[in-house]
Amino acid sequence: MMEEIYHQFTTKAAQSRKMELAKMRQLAEGKVYTGRQAKKLGLVDKVGTLYDAIVAAKEAAGLPTDKKIEMLILPKPKSFLEQLLSRQSLETKARNAYLQTLAPDWINALADLEIIQHLFRQPVNTMLPYRVMIR
Image 1 (tube, rainbow, N blue to C red):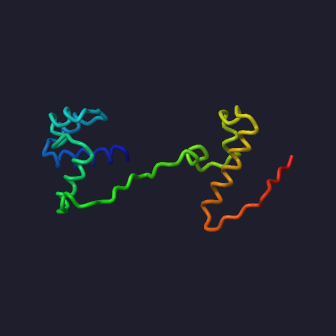
Image 2 (image 1 turned 135 degrees about the vertical axis):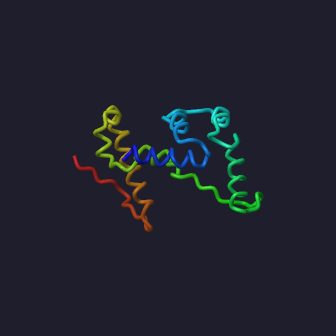
Image 3 (image 1 turned 45 degrees about the vertical axis):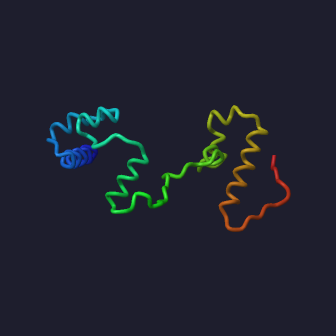
């Protein structure tokens, strides 16, 4: 399957670059090039910035180059708290060797943060004014 995807990619790239497939495959092979190298080899038309690419895309779409656009960065960056807690439950993370090196007070604080994070995903937020701990 991977070979088929690779074949499709190199075939389409060779056609769009008006390059022989054998030459495209020789240049590809997982290699990394600088912008200047890629231009010299015929892999790109121009070297530029993200802004240059956006202007070129607007022109290709027939939009005025000064037209405001919404730029979405996907996937959306996670907040520090989301990165820290990710999608795993704290119990799962507690099994992680790194978290086991934390003091119990820190683990309890992270558990509280996880509860607050889950609360704010809901349309209505309610929380008891106390914390129940079973030992």
